Length: 370
Image (spheres, rainbow, N blue to C red):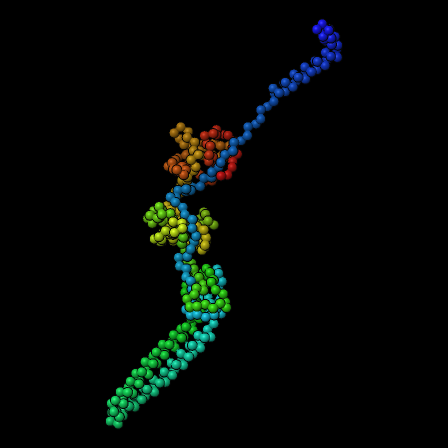
């Protein structure tokens, strides 16, 4: 131990050792001071879910999606069979009432009509001859040159000739009508919804050739659950909107509800007539039927967006600078699917949709869409 103490005294007396020891102490003090003066990391903005205010949103008792359909859609067919010669329209073409749509090969029908006309002409000649015979025998019987029985026979022949002419005239008219049936005309103005045959195909009488949808009356076909059938049946005017034009509203009225539920979906098919349909309403479009009138000055907001400030409910309004500010609101009703707000909000304003109790006035937030 005495040797270790002697070595230590020798080192302490060495100037270079003392300078090295002082340098190490100074560096340690500087590093310690730097650690004490380091600034804390900046707080990151809180991420919030945003909800954009839209007046009238969510105030319908129910909403159903459906498809725009024509009220009248007819499957047009020829009244006689034959080979389709020409088809003059395609799917989507608009047609007028009486317009020619398709034509059959009418060669056989023309021959049949010509034969019926010839039979009628022959019957007309026989009737003329029988009539002349009856007139002549009436004169002879008046002069007592022939018997009454012979005159009766001529009268009977005349009646038979007249009836035969009448029957063949009817057959001739029928054959002429059938010849006219070789042309298919539109019975009303509309649009061609489907083409079911092509040129060259042999069709039978009554076989559907073209499906024509009338455009004068349009409606929406929806499926209604059984617990809503009674409510829908008693509903007055409904609201209809198109997926392609969600900002536009049309007036609707329930026209019919199916008496029996669908076997697979267990829903009832209902048709809602569009009362003020315009050119923007096209067949086949997706539409929404809103049961009940929407509120014009109110909206439905998420439950998590309401911050209770004493007795006054409020929401956090997100400003353009990204900071939140408390805005008092008037609550019309607390519902299971949200809060019905009747005042305090304007169209297009953004509010915090969830976590309102975690925010403070003026806090910077980072917005994310739902």
